[in-house]
Amino acid sequence: MTRLTVLAMAAIGMGLAIVLMASPTAAHQAAAPAEPRPEPPPEFTKLCVRCHPSDKIVEGRRYKTQWDQVLEQMVARGATGTDQEFDVVFDYLVSEFGRVDINKAPADEIAQVLHLEQGVADTIVKQRPFADFDTLSALPGVPVLELTKRRDAIVF
Ligand code: HEC
Image (cartoon, rainbow, N blue to C red; front, side):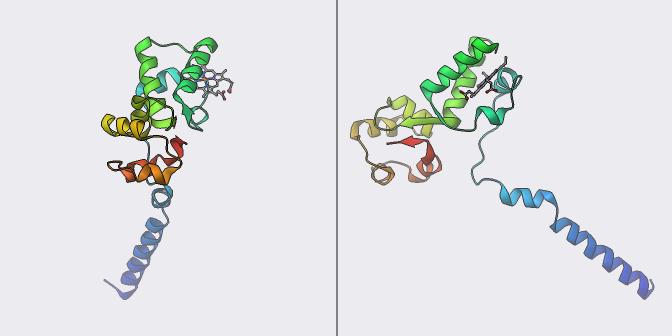
């Protein structure tokens, strides 16, 4: 191998390293949210993205009753699916894009929206009202980390 070849190979190697460092995949991973939501169920894609993109549907959180109204409106606008498919979509929307009034909602709704065990939700209902996130977090048995992830879903 000549000296020139070695230099050329080193240059190619450096070029490759630069390309790898600047790759869009790496940049994308760095920008990704810490807690990505799960993929939507196939029923969601089947029933809901025919007429408009999904990011329009889930741009904000809604109360369970509001999601119920949205689904009724979509049926009126022509969305079709079986009752079972609509149930799956409803559960997905409430679990991942729900909003809950911690001082008024029934325990099962608190459990679903905040991804808490039913027992914890029952305790919350027994001990409420709560003035703010800090007093709620101070309740013994509440998984504060889990709750923090969905802090924007809680209304006091
Ligand atoms: C047959 C067409 C159609 C289907 C299927 C459909 N939608 Fe819609 N959707 C519309 C129309 C029309 C609008 C109102 C115009 C707009 O905002 O683009 C709308 C608007 C919305 C909005 C915004 C409502 C608001 O008040 O801002 C949401 C949320 C939504 N759809 C959710 C869904 C969900 C969830 C599904 C699946 C169950 C679904 N859509 C399926 C036609 C459809």
